[in-house]
Length: 428
Ligand SMILES: NC(=O)c1ccc[n+]([C@@H]2O[C@H](COP(=O)([O-])OP(=O)(O)OC[C@H]3O[C@@H](n4cnc5c(N)ncnc54)[C@H](O)[C@@H]3O)[C@@H](O)[C@H]2O)c1
Ligand SMILES: N[C@H](CO)Cc1c[nH]c[nH+]1
Ligand SMILES: [Zn+2]
Image (cartoon, rainbow, N blue to C red; front, top):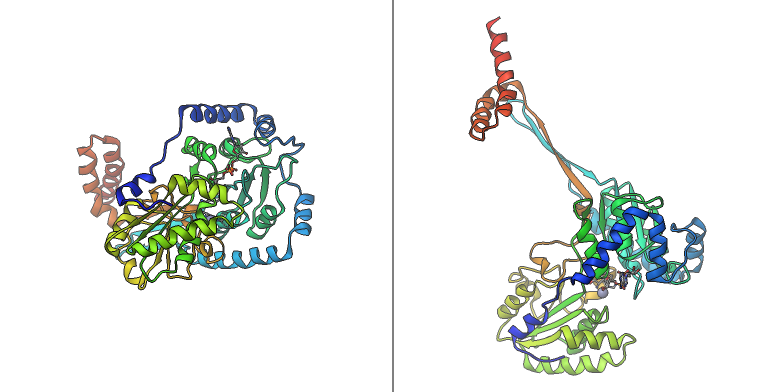
């Protein structure tokens, strides 16, 4: 990892948008799925995943086989993680409310779960049972009636047992063996095997992200979760081995992941640089991590922690670790980050798996305005309005004035007809 100036470090994070070629590919896939439905899904799965499927849906027998096959230790870890994730998300529930005014007017807001959602679970380069839990549990906690999961099959037509078992633990209703843009299109428009959903959530590669953007409007989507990112702010009290290990934890996700250290200590910067080199050599995914660090990894030395917070706020990272003597004090200066990890033992992977908060977080600077995936993403709200006659007679004339100022005569007339009726009744 290079030690660079802070402006170079900020530029390291800049990403290229979608190419016209990618646009064309994904538009073509979506159009084909709309037209040919299941036939297109089967053909595209053969083309991209090299799997020749006889059925798109995962069967009960496959689920039972996965339960038998999976390591009991993994099953137990998934169950315990699911419990913590469920408990955290239960705290996010928002209630409907209703409030009555003195004149009898009743106003309120009704919160209702979405009926059916689709969850994309990546299946290309790695297996992510934890991502199944993180996407499905908030939907279940919100009260969504039907959760449809899509994930690309392996070349032999199977879905990895840990993914299937995680789906069972989390409460998925239907699992479809399809990935990429074709899976997103199927959820957005519906096919013989895939029901049309109201919202699509879940991370994926560029084809998945682009497809989600293109079907937005037909269905709702969550924010687009791009390549993983970590920023560590560390002072001279941080342990260089801990810092290096946490930087590598995100670098191993993909060669487009970003790992950045901002520190007030030039000594720590050099120690972390050496540690990263040493620890990276021991990793199975070292080539991926090296490529990520070369392109999107950097260390910068700043004069004080306030400046470190300013640089981090400009990056608005997905994950931010505060490995400093007093992380709670520094927290006051942090404005933008998807998840903030405080202190030496709040290592980022704790948040990826077991802490409870969601690991689907805003990336690429979107933590400035997006929030972590949560129960809110799976509900919608309706306003409730009951006007008493007394309140109507008081406010009606104001509505007429406002409607006339906008040239909307029918609006004014809807009020006037009631005012006239009232006047006629009073005359009788
Ligand atoms: N933010 C998170 O919480 C989180 C969690 C897990 C994974 N991820 C990210 O999700 C991504 C997963 O990517 P992945 O590729 O491993 O799996 P993926 O499931 O997203 O993509 C695989 C699919 O991409 C499609 N595809 C591949 N090449 C194509 C091409 N040339 N043209 C059209 N379609 C093509 C195929 O249909 C294939 O099934 C990674 O970037 C990973 O970091 C993020
Ligand atoms: N760190 C990833 C999100 O950026 C999520 C993940 C899944 N598994 C391990 N990590
Ligand atoms: Zn991770």
